[in-house]
Picture (cartoon, rainbow, N blue to C red):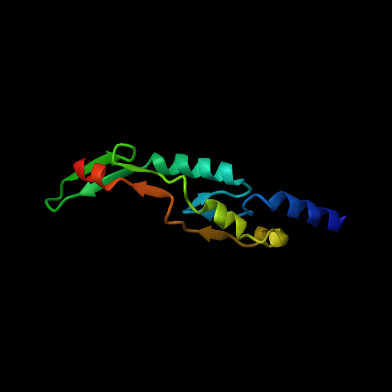
Length: 114
């Protein structure tokens, strides 16, 4: 029975993120690449950007207006492929925090104009 459960876990996690896994503080536990990518895109593109100037005035920009968009050519799949799904059971006792710097693309010209 233990072998069957272990093999099922290996099969289940071979294309999913392990339990207790976050990417940039967003929970992606048990998600496939596509699910994780969609979840991250929704979470990251709804943010606002608040600028504080020298004279203490502030301006808040919506991310979609400011030229900051979700990068479809990111390293989420590469991160998923680096997991060792044979050790899936150890992730019930530990958490994995992943920080990716390539999730957003900035159109600097559009941001400067705004």
